[in-house]
Structures are given as structure tokens and as C-alpha cells.
Image (cartoon, rainbow, N blue to C red; front, side, top):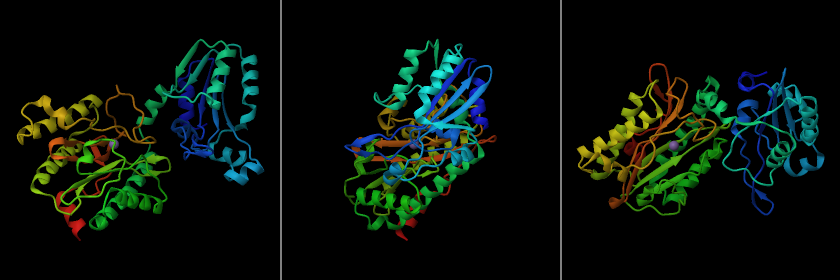
Length: 405
Ligand SMILES: [Mn+2]
């Protein structure tokens, strides 16, 4: 049994059953589906990214682990490609009991019949479950047919495990960051010939695909005043001379993500005003990375970003009192990064070695139509932190040099 599944089982109460679904394809329109996104908790335990599967964990006098999966079918294969055999699922997951998903109702009925003491149900509480989904139906059936005294939220167990990354996970995040680095170098090389946001977005997509990667989230290419909108994803405007363009982009590598933001002048040269503002954000980005270490709470981390930024804005007379910072900086300093871009975390947990966080201070000045954000991905270590995205250029002079080369 793998140690992640063992940890979950160990922390479940006796006489309990837990269900973790891999997820279903979501309909986009008519017979079209969105690209499948696996439930990351399911992937974390199984290493699989296949829809319509279910992991069942049972803890009575003994424990059992079962994987329910779709069986291969010749017809389905003609339309959707082949599914792995149960044998290969066994090899990949080390889960010894693999059953046809069609038999799950029968299995559960027998289980409850032969184990009348099972009274705890573990699920991942989700913000949204689709009413007609297989998942929803199965959960409703269990809840209506069996008396379960407690519904437990699995997320609490996953949060503790998933926030501390293992070596292999850090390796995958680094791989995703490497892809982001090569994309950004490409952007700099081509920036002067790119006409606008859409074309730049196209370059990001092209480079992602060349690297066998995908967008970790909808890429933000925001020039000029568009950078004031944090979730600007239209990416449809042409560049105007002397503008900055903010690019917030992420790559995926084997379900892990990177999340990087850089802000550069479209014509290759920062104006005097842009220089001042850029250097404020860059210095805060660097100071935070130098300062952050184990023992700091997530709240302290966020407050530090705010206080450093407001100090610099005061010095530069952009604001007259600390409280005004919220006019110019209106998002968090960073978040956990991993299988999800905004990775799950226990907000109460202090920073510990093995956590991966983003550091992304920014300033946004409405009157001047300028938004600047610089985001790196860091690993918390015993001594402090390592900037995993160190190699992605952010020094003003180096950016200008690379754009104008
Ligand atoms: Mn981010």
C-alpha cells in the first residue's frame, strides 16, 4: 500500500468508508466536452488521471483499498481511444483490488450488509457537485439507504499532506517552471515584432505545446490599463507604444504547475516613470524572498508584503498614509502551488520546509493606467527559501537587453 493511502487510512475513524472520485468530463456544449481535469486528491493517491474512476477506502476491523474503473470496450475505444487494462492499473497503482465501476452499487450493498457497524462516511466537501453526476447519485444512494452518523471532510487530511511537497513533487514543479522559463525567453526574443495581446498569447500557447505542456490557468496578457484588472483574460488588445505588458502564465508538467508573472515594456525600454514603479515592485519581490523562512504564518507573510509595499509607496509619495495601500495593491502576496495552481492548504499552518509558494507583489495605478506584478515560485527550506524561478529574468536592465538583442 502506498504511504499516502496508508496515511489517510490511519487517520480515518474506525468503521468508516471513504470515497474519492477521479471526476467526470464536463459538457461544454452539445456533444463537446471540456478537456478532462482529474480530481487532484485522487491523482495524489493513485497517480492516475483517468475519468470515471473511484477509489474506495474501508476501515473496519481491517482495512481495504479498492479501485473501481471503466472496463475496456471495443466500441468506446473507437471513439475515445483505449483505456488501460486492469492489469496495467494494478502495476501503476499497486492497488490489488480493481473492479468494474458498474459493480460498485453491488459491492457497497454487500459491504454494508456484512459490516453493519460502518457509520462514518468520508468525502471531499466540494463547492459544487453536478446534480446528475455519477458521483452525486452514488453519494445520495449511500446516504439514503444507510444510516451514517457522520460525514467527514477528507480535505482536512489532504491539506496536511499536500502542503508539504515530496522530492518528486518539487522536481515536477521545477520542470513546469523550466517550461515557463523557455516560454518567457521566447517572448523577450520576439516581443518587438508582436503587435498585441492575442499574438503574444498565441506565442505562449505555441511554446507550451512545443514543450508538451498546457496552460495551468487562463493566461493573462494585459497591456497598459488592462493590467489593472487582475483576472483580465480577454487578451484582445493591440499594444500601444510606451506601454507595459503584464504576462501571468503557468505551465503544467505531469499534473503539477508553475505560476509566473513578468511585466515588460512592449517597445523594449522602460520610461522614467515605469522604472521607478517597476523597481518598487521588484525590490519587494526580492526582499520577501530573502526574508521568508519556516515559522512564519501565512497571515504574517501576507502582511509583510502589504507593509513593504506601503512603505515604498510612502517614500515615493504615491500615498500619504499606510491605509491607502489598498487602492494600489488589492490581492494577496502569494499562495501555495502544486497539483493545483492555488493549492489546498491549511491556513493555520505556519510555513515549513517543503512548502512551495508564490511571491507576487504588485502595484496598480488607475490614474496612470499602469499595473505591474512580479511573481516567482519559491520553495521553503530549513534555512529560508530557494527561488525556483530564479532563472526567469526580472532585472530591468537584463529585460531591456534581451528584448532589444
Ligand atoms: Mn499566482
